[in-house]
Image (cartoon, rainbow, N blue to C red):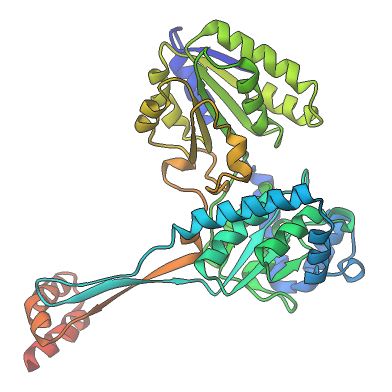
Length: 430
């Protein structure tokens, strides 16, 4: 774990190293993913079958390529009342939040008599990737499927790896609740390629969303353009800005909530109190020992954790903006004032009683968020990722006469005579 002090000589260089620390896929991953995509494109189902046998250790022909709606219903009915109620609460809140994101069509007639506007329509089909490696994530099913449903996507399919042929019933129960149309027992880069290009069994989709490992992220990056994607997501991150009025155990738990995801996850604390920083560090070490995910959390905290001492918490905000974190907690008295200054963060959690983990499950906003400093230019998953905007315009003789000559002049200046003529020929006849 790194300790930095903004008042110490050399802080700027050390913090820049922290900002630029690379925790994502290397060239070997990119090369291997390129090979997998090529195989799936050329060999289709045969490649998917072989790669699933290699990586997930089961034969799709034996275990079954698809998971039926009946299996999902059975998984739902097999849940305890407590879990069913929890999933239903999460689904209700997530759906309600995302329905409010649906954009309105627009239309107006300007001063020259030109009718202009935009119409929003959903994509026809979407694929949702749900991880199945280190842990099962029913919350990811809801966070990806429900915005697609809110957008009006016609065909919603899910892919999820099933190591040794086994699938977590919670994932299937969430798929039932979200109304997923198809579930395929495949994962990794080969699943992304199958969704993008299609195979004999699997029809291609228009958009792919959902988190995954480095191979999944790299496959999405390489296939963008063949298919739409939400984002290229990397290891999870949390930044906490906290004063000494917090319980150090609370803040330690918040930092570890991301550290337990993966050894490459990153957890960073900014505070203006050195004694409080020491208490949080001690609490982190104490709590790790009690976690079932201790090995992962320890590796993450030791390799990528950081505590940064600043003169005032306001001084932390420009540093936070440089990190552009996936998750940002503001646990301090003046949280709202600090929030007003934040420019770059995937999602912000305001106040001492708003842990990031609440946003992972039941709050409503999406937990699929930009990582790796991409919050500088990207946003979390939303209804808009499953929709597209089509602009339209309509001119009559008078409005064409009003703005057409300028178009002719610009087309001529660009050396495009056919463009100019398509407008001028109408002007000449009017």
